[in-house]
Picture 1 (cartoon, rainbow, N blue to C red):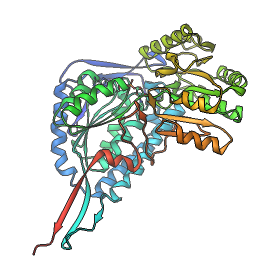
Picture 2 (cartoon, protein in one colour; picture 1 turned 60 degrees about the vertical axis):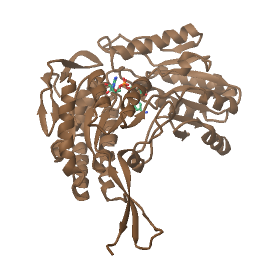
Picture 3 (spheres, rainbow, N blue to C red; picture 1 turned 180 degrees about the horizontal axis):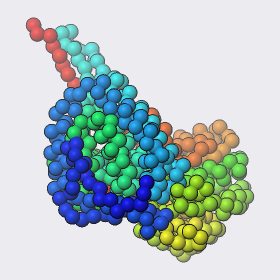
Picture 4 (cartoon, rainbow, N blue to C red; picture 1 turned 30 degrees about the horizontal axis):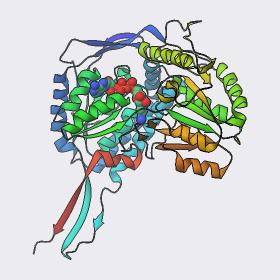
Length: 488
Ligand code: NAD
């Protein structure tokens, strides 16, 4: 892909269309801010209304389309995404910053999700029951919600939109897709994939623009029946209040402060690799990233020393360079937040063991690069141990025993994912049963989700609903109960 000043458009009613405003969002590469990646519309509320009108019209036929048609379109989209994985993955890396292996890997994962949901129109969508009346055939069927708003963050700009859009479409809904302003290019390419796959006009509508306008209009617009949102807890809660007050169904997947507990019997080398990958891949910008390591006291010193050595060896650089293990943060504002939290940690009395600064040496001066950072002597009540930092910063907390470790792990408002590293089955099992998290890993990192199983958090990390796999049906459909009596 060439650096470009190309002006991109919205996609409404099956046509690429200019927005109702002249406002533009200049997209650039966070590894080299001088590299332009195109200009995207800062759409107005009116554009959302146009998309709602197109979607409402398309819904009439899409909800009644055959399983064969829906399955074939999703299957074709999977094939196209697989074929375009290098191109889309590269665009993802250029605009979001993660490494090219992660960018292409995420795109291929998008193709796998589409493949899974291409089978979904063929799976059961209801149950039959015996009735008190022998003449009655009593059954349920899951039917679509209608027009659904899809509001997504920048950190998995392919996988998250796809894991919302694929089930939504499979179950017969139509979509208004509002991607994050930091990653509009991948949203454009995803939409192209569905267009090329032959999705009928109006079934998927892409509206670029700011959350405060386009996202807020999706929350308010009475023509939108459901909203699936992934992003920060504060924005999600605000959106929930607005949309649920008008009776819309809302699904929230929110932030995390994910712990790894390292038991005294853990193999230190294995624990270090698991923490390193969970904390530093994607520059720590995963909702499931590891940000707290709670280590049993007997091995705390040896573990911390080994972790710091390993973190120091990380190669930081532009994601497009295959030698880089870690790319830049996504934006100036993300960089400022992370550097501010590093100052907060130092002021709170945590011990900075490595990293802690902006990197501007070699070719990094034009990007938002921050050194991978480890704090030691972190206490559970510190802000760096309580609040989501969303960057390459991990804090080591000492626990005198496993009960205390679990108590510390549970002592935050979030409950997305958690992991334990141990060689003892009983320790692992007790952890699984007592940890407050929607996703639990034993001897693997906190990040990572397979497409066919439920995904989501406890506490402030979610709104109880689950995404992915067959669990997606619960949000994207509603139940109709049918009492069917034969004519007498
Ligand atoms: P964000 O909340 O700032 O933005 C998310 C989306 O909401 C964007 O599209 C944004 O434009 C839109 N938005 C912003 N203000 C809005 C408003 N007033 N009304 C409606 N929409 C609005 O989050 P972000 O910075 O893009 O993403 C990072 C956050 O996402 C982190 O907190 C991370 O943990 C979370 N996340 C959670 C999961 C999960 O599955 N639980 C996955 C990935 C990211």
